[in-house]
Amino acid sequence: MHRPIDDPGFEGEGFGGEGNGAVPPPYRSHPAPGEPSGPRADAPESRGDGSGPRGDDSGLRREPAGLRPGFPGSRSGPTGPRAGDPDPAAGLWADTHGAPDPGRVDLRVLGALLARHGWRRRGGAAGRYSRWTPPGAGTGTSLLVPESRAFPDCDDLLGEALAALAHSATPSAREVLTGLAVPSDEIRWWRDVPPGPAGTVPWTVREQLGSAARQLLLAGALAVRGRAGYYGARHRRAAQASLEGVLVGASPGGRGLTAFLPVDTGRPIAVRLHHALHAAREAVDYQRATGGTEAFDAAVEAGVSRELTEALVALVRGTEGARIALEWAPAAGPPEGCAVRPEPVEFSPGDLPALREASARYRTGEPSVPVRLTGAVVRMRRSGPRGAGTVRLRVLGGAEVPHVRVTLDEEAYRTAGHAHLVGLPIRVSGRLESRGGFRRLTDASEVVPVQVDETERDRLMKALHENLDFFEEACGPED
Image 1 (cartoon, rainbow, N blue to C red):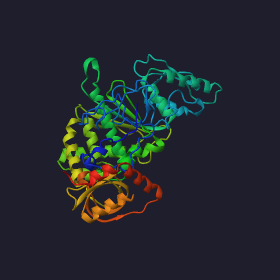
Image 2: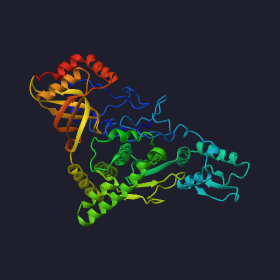
Image 3: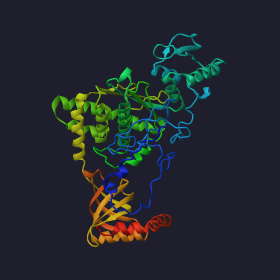
Image 4: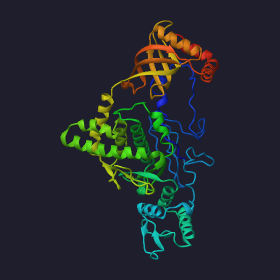
């Protein structure tokens, strides 16, 4: 089952993954719409290195029945969808299963989609209808598509063509119907990998492709939120939310992957990726020709970042080359400032050193950010009954990160503890440190409790009372 893009690895990183005692979070994480609220009994365990089905680098689950909504997260596995599983992002794509209403189909858009996906026009009655045959050998069912709505049998003929597409075994037929149901920009990835037995592609190779594609889309969504060489934890939640409507499907050979980004919600991401990929290609060429990396600094404005270069490394690593192509939705046309038919962008193993060097440059070059944030205390710890201590905050405002860790002096630590006991968040000023992925606040000052409405305060107090013993243990000295 396809699921919305997420980043399950973040919650276990930084302060939250150290195994220390914890104050239960007053604001608990909720599953995404349609996502199961607990672990599945048949879900494989993660190996902790990102290589298992639950690791950060997990890929796509291939749908034998065609495309389905969403983009799989790390909870997917190689077993395929189960009967009764919900479709988390199904709202936007509810009409993609089956043939669309003939009365709502634009004949020019249908012809453009058929041509894009390899169908061939082979004659027909001039001025009345055209005949289209499937890609490849063309042995599948052909389609009779009317050329004009001026004839009374147009809707009947079009309905028969759409029904034939819905029942066709040709993989591209489902992609044509998807483009008709929801106007979408298409991003395609290809990887040139050595074939396995009988020309098959190993499951791990498909996982790598899915993981790299997911990282690349997330990098584009991050760049829409603002330009930076390194985002870390910043903007991640908003970027993931913007990708919930993305539809994906793998090619039958396992070497390709297509993502459909709805024009209404996903076009800014597609446009940003279009500019960022070409800027990254030019920066790599410059670095390989001159040895200088300054072109990557200028490429940040186009959307290139550490997240994007790392995604490209993951896409190219272990292959003989990779290619990314973008095609605009025929119903919407190309966006302003972009080519009508963008050229595919290709990367080879020879580009990996330049991409890795740029990634390291972005990570070390991004400065820390001064912030004044508001957060609820979810963890406290210090080595003794007195002195400075470390506090973990669930950020409520002031910074585009979900959690931060901050070291407070004795008085500020006491203030944080008292605020939590009475159900109040705190406000603190400092610098969001880039070295930890923007998860650590340094130079903390001006720690004060913040008044909130009664509903939020009740939630904080309820979380405290339910776990009071655990809270006292977490705040006590270490053995």
